[in-house]
Length: 270
Image 1 (cartoon, rainbow, N blue to C red):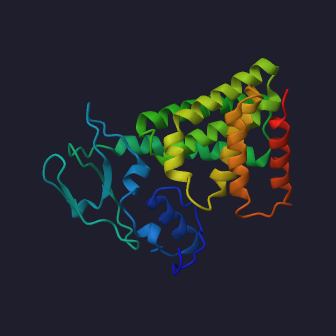
Image 2 (image 1 turned 60 degrees about the vertical axis):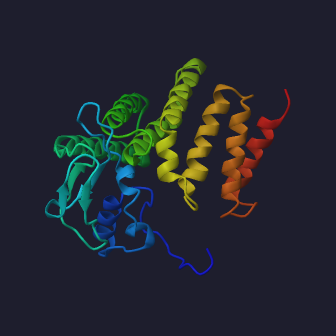
């Protein structure tokens, strides 16, 4: 908006505040106090940890151990962490008061570490077909684990695990033995995209995030049109990704031109 300070992000703005603060401190040795980092109202949902108490649908929030007071269901008072606070946080459900989340957090950390290592293997481009299939099975299991640990509608961890599996599906297409296997791989990716759409949009769909507007939307369009070249929604999604790209890149950019060509091809009548 007019009058607002223009800033440059040094990290992934979609991830939970604690992750951002840790990354900025480790990489740049400062604690950020921008408007986004000062907001605490969306962070609990972005983390999205499920309460382990059967039947409880409360929100699990992060609080410094010495600064929280549980006063009964739906009545937790707290002083939120400031941008420069590095004290260890305690997790507490704001409805039932449960604080036993240590094992869940450890499990989530193990899953995320392994997903990151698999992603690094993709980046090195030294993965053969057999190893790629093994990674696919692992990523599918890790995505299911994240769904069990975190809320599928808002959690960044669910969104990240889903995105990793969908990227694997896209990378594995050239290694599929036949057309039937490629179609089945695309269908699996589309199922995960649909399941995790709430978390993806909650965490990643904000202005300027090209990972969402170009990459994620582009992959979904690719999968849809591979399964069904006449899928009108696939073309709509591709056009949306193109329009977002044009906010940041000129029409003659190679990537934009490639998207324009795809839109033209898939829009042709049979």
